[in-house]
Length: 546
Ligand code: ADP
Image 1: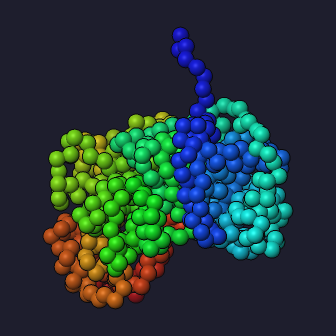
Image 2: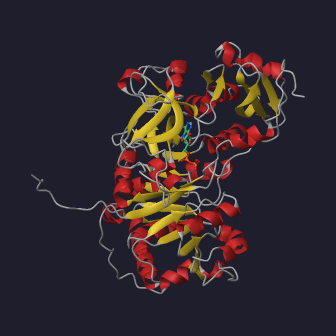
């Protein structure tokens, strides 16, 4: 027997309809690419998104077509997303931090028909546009006054382009399983892989993301997504913020400490989210200026492991709650968030910080397990680590135009490629990427644990641990350090600091100091490059190969 409830497809543009109707006056504030800070609201965003939809239809864009965006977080980018999905086309966010050849590869693989581009990236595109044959037209997200001399195919200023229609338009109707968005994961080996979201998966994920034990945002919040829209759906904030009707602050192209601080305080931001590197910059800036964060209540930090020092400083010095989070492009992206369940609620000080170093527990809609290499489920004791696998309505079941990728297992589980523990209360902690974990004498050493420990040293700015070949143990850890500007330290200082805080056999065999550690386009340490660089490194006490 079927239920007798209405069939109301979970379509993304219904979110902006709701925001416009019930929170229409709520502000959307943007640091514009042209410079000034500009304000609009949800009612206006919806009206202009309808124009985008109408204008796209006039350009012949239809259900299932891919429309790329190469843009920062701004109100225009947001309007473009809702306009694209409102006719059943697919927003394809392109990460501008990728190498130009990678951008060429993914745009061709996605066969994007149009591209919305910020002024910042016009020069980049001009260099590669002749290699993008599927793109029929470029829309530059600006007005006529700021429009550069047009060299891109059929290019127009966004404001002129939408001015050609009147906005008297209705969203198209289609099934909730229709594709809505697309994002390629960096793919540290081989080509990037396309994740194709649906309206249903994105809407369900937005609900999950807004829950009290997830981001816990409400209409009274002022939300600033510093995490870019091109990084895994900006962790749902472009959907969950209008869904709850919160004020939205978009940081545009400026992500340095001073610019972020200006927005946080001027607009009384209460909730924000980004990768650890952004917060490191902000905290260093505050240390210099003596700035305070009286309005900020909560910050979600994820994308890579959040160093203990960041959590501690936010909480102890600035009174801001840190929620550590883990996710993946393939998961829309949220997987777990580290909010306190009653079992841990009474903890304080270092014991609380120990829990906050974990990536947390999943919201409803994410199933999770850890297994050994043979697929046997492992116990939830907080110590045993294994391959982390997930399932859920916002988890990918295949990559775009790739058949039978083994990460999508037969029984519906997705192998995340992460290695993790899960404790008795269901808190997951990442110990490593499966390909980064160090195998020493048949036992596993977590590089993330060692890195977290090393960055706790007051003179260390960044740390990376990689496995280096060892004749007896197969691999042993090498610690690579970038010191804070103007600081000096020795190998003995660093190892002395780590001594006693980790198992003896986990201690790095050697420490090297470098000026810079390479990063991926989404801000993660590029271990593959580091391993390449140190592949012939000879650890102390080991005979160099002839
Ligand atoms: P990309 O590989 O394109 O950067 P993702 O953002 O999807 O794409 O990266 C997901 C991976 O990032 C996860 O599988 C995990 O290894 C890592 N990651 C994300 N959040 C955390 C976290 N809080 N702690 C440790 N690792 C994390």
